[in-house]
Amino acid sequence: MVKRLSAAIVLAFCVNAPLLAASAASNPVVVVTPPQPVWNALSKDQQSVLAPLAPEWGSMENYRRKKWLGIAERYKTMTPTEQQRLQEKMRDWAKLTPQQRLAAREKFREFRQMAPDEKETVKQKWQEYQQLPEEEKQRLREQPGSKDTSSAAGATPATTPKSDPR
Amino acid sequence: MNELHFASRVRQHLNQGLQNLDDDKLARLKAARTSALAAQKQPATNPVFAVAGHFFRFHLEGTRARHILAALAVALAVALYAHWQADQLIADLSDVDSALLSEDVPVEALLDKDFSTWLKDSRQQ
Image (cartoon, rainbow over all chains, first blue to last red; front, side, top):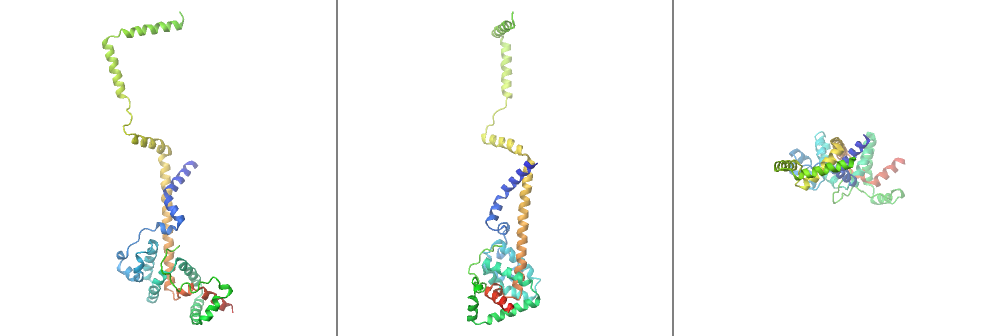
């Protein structure tokens, strides 16, 4: 019985070897996502929602196309204000590096868990922070605790979109 | 007369008898031999098929079809799990990204580490 089971596992491993090898090299999401539609194959609604991404759609990985198609589905349930915000941020977001996107998602998860008044405080503080003179910002960057800060990392989108590590 | 001597006499007698076989008996013996040779299995004409046949016969029959089916079932399960996991990850990304992009907080604010540090400091003060 044990012999039979081990033979089955070995054979299964051989059958899945390409998948496992690719998974080890990158991410299973990248490997197993089936081909997604080209821009012209999208519905009119999808094209309208994802219009800011049209120039990059052709060079986008399948799993990212699938993710954006998922976002286009969720778009229908958003308020007009949310829809507008989403479309305004879409293109810059797609141009961020994978590391920047990952960092932003992590921060956003923290932000999401805050109480509503705390969220408002963060938004107000952001406005205040932007009003700070450049010298003050420079002084903050030079503080001992902020050595590794990449100044306004997200403010400058990457010029070349790269594959998302997640 | 011992047994050995008796056997020798029988052999001698049979050999002499062979010399005196008539044509009819010889023809019948020849026909029987030809028939026996015709019934003998012929070797495979194509060695590639013969090798493949031997392989399947000795290896696949040996490991049994159940082994192969079990392996295919495990492989299918692994592939389906990987596919399901990828779908889940993409759905999670769609959720987070759509919330992040539709929220009234600038992406720059989430990415600016100096702002994050400044915010912490201002809370402590």
